[in-house]
Structure formats: C-alpha cells, structure tokens
Amino acid sequence: MKTVELRKKNEKQLKQQVLELRKEQFNLRFQLAGGQLQSTARIKELRRDIAKIKTLVNETKANG
Image (cartoon, rainbow, N blue to C red):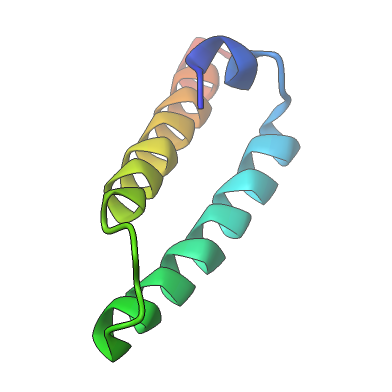
C-alpha cells in the first residue's frame, strides 16, 4: 500500500482500513498457527501497512 494513496483518504476511511487490515491479520495468525498459511510475508506487510496508516492519522491530528 502506497503512502500517496493513503494521504488521499480522510481519517474515517483510514480508521476503517485499519480495522479491515487487523481482521485480515487476525485470520492470517490463525492460519499460521494451524499450519495452513502459505505466505508468511503477508503478515509483515500487514503490520507495516497498519503502522503507515496509524502514522498518517497521528500526523493529521498533530497538524490540525
């Protein structure tokens, strides 16, 4: 997910996206524990995407 794309969204959309990514992360962790996960790199991508979004939300709050 590119930061440029995320900057175009408002705070409500960003928070909704974080919820969706967290749900996907939750499901992937279950697959990992069950030995069904094919791509473990996706977990790392999700973690970084969530961090990017949270950073942007905090940045917009700080800038007013």
